[in-house]
Image (tube, rainbow, N blue to C red; front, side, top):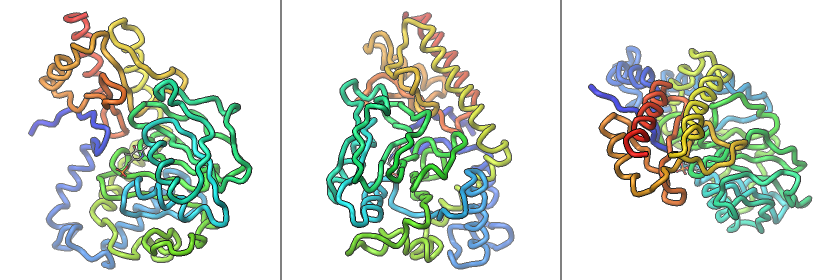
Length: 359
Ligand SMILES: *Cc1c(COP(=O)(O)O)cnc(C)c1O
């Protein structure tokens, strides 16, 4: 077996220990004689899996009791619609901060349901910064304020969250569980699983309970948070295997000391990479230092004619999925929780070597 260092933006690397546990339990889950994939979501064994995953996530994020945790399908993209459908209530407008590609998609979808007030945008500088909160044009009539805590493509990440009077909603798909979080500052948090939680097909929603049960008229029941809350996320068949794997990831995080410990590791990993970029004239990071993401690190080479050689050299060293998004160019190293520090060390070594040979 040979495993690569996988810098994929998503679906992304999973902890090796989690995959090994899943492999051991694949054919006969703890004496049930069947795989988790083959068991009823109503079975005792699966209910236990679901309940312990829920309890572990609650513990990791210290989610207060007045919040509901939901394990849904449809990806973060479905949340772009579910948020306005459930949270607009009697309002007709919502505030959105436009910090990058994912914010833009959320804004476009919300525009199908209400008038969107873009309070600030980083688009004038190709999303390399987050406009200062003092300059945001918040609307007092907004039903909520939406942010994307970490822009997976541009690599900008909120370091502090805004204090707004409107309920704060955050797309945390690519940085949930990367650092401690004060959930009580948010009305709703959502995240597709395939970056920092588990495999694709699962979406986690954390919503304050008083916001449930007020979906707009005509909302399909599958898009109504209250329906899922009422049914314990089993209003229909949930993505059972993804939920099980997410539970293994939560146990893995707990065993590693929880979010304080993983945040320290993430800071060390991202600093190594940004330092390597900043200490060289050959590599550059387009993102303003104060908002650089600890999860997605975009960087460019001095000459983009060398991109292909950089990527193929990386590939031969087992460093994969480093090609940047076309909107930014160059490279992007996604270094989520499950990407080991050794992967970052190997990348930094390779970058130094490539610069010596080509710089
Ligand atoms: C990946 C991603 C999405 C889209 O998630 P899907 O599960 O593909 O719908 C949305 N927002 C952010 C920040 C992402 O990283």
